[in-house]
Length: 384
Image (cartoon, rainbow, N blue to C red; front, side):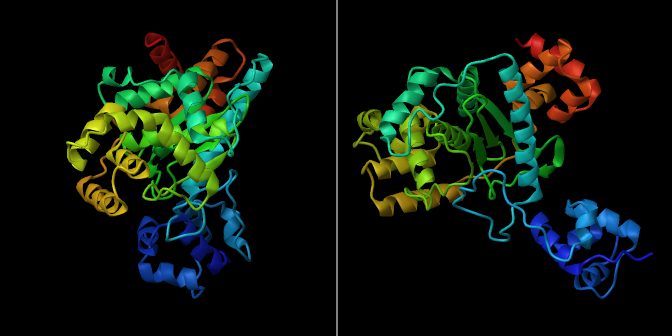
């Protein structure tokens, strides 16, 4: 029995899912020519093949029968400066991970309302018109971040974990993952987004794409905090090669994040004119526990180096680094709590233990099996 599906929808879904036709054909165990015939309307798949096709294209089966592709919009403001060249549509991975975070944030918000918790007082404390250095100082003071902690963190990863701990202790959910849910085959593309932020005065949330470099995640976290301080939600993928983003909100948050992590006055004191640019960049990246890219941008914005030197050094850094697999290192239950936010996981597991939430719903929110909850609980309390 043939499925009378719409070829236009296949082509739309292919672009949306960002898979080459040959790959989908292989996944469906059909020839590329036959799949191409489905996509141009010359042939039609069987009902069973169409059902499998919808799964591989990550769309509801009914979509295949629509006359025109549905309009999909991100549930958060799209503030991305760099967007994937191959598609104007948000990928299914991005859409699913945002909706997953929104479900967690809604549950946590209702929990806080039930407990009559106070609002997080720094969300929206400033506006986009306020001075970046003033906002940055308030972020550092609120979180208790200063230059004395950084030498005591053994690595950039340790400093990132320290920052996340400080942020969560102030009431912000920090989700950090490189996959959709628990599906290791659906890795998040850093070319599409580096993170997103949900600004809420009771249950603010930030998400870090952990497929990015550890050093880059530090700056992204600071950038997302800036969003909270000026009460601006959004999906982020700024172009860190430029000092002024196309979106003014992103430019403001860039400036706040840079000043938060690398205060200008302190930077001027530490920049050593007797050293080479490379020597300064290397030393200051270690001192501030940020990436060499951030130090380069800071040096350029503070007039320590010229635009030409900045561009040349930036290009050289791009050529010298390689992205490594970082999502799967560490203990599984540590990854679960990191992906779902430590504070969210603790609160949810506690609600299950108190009989306030069902194990089935808790497992759904954490993207794990019900049988795994007890092991997560054991891990949490053994590391309390």
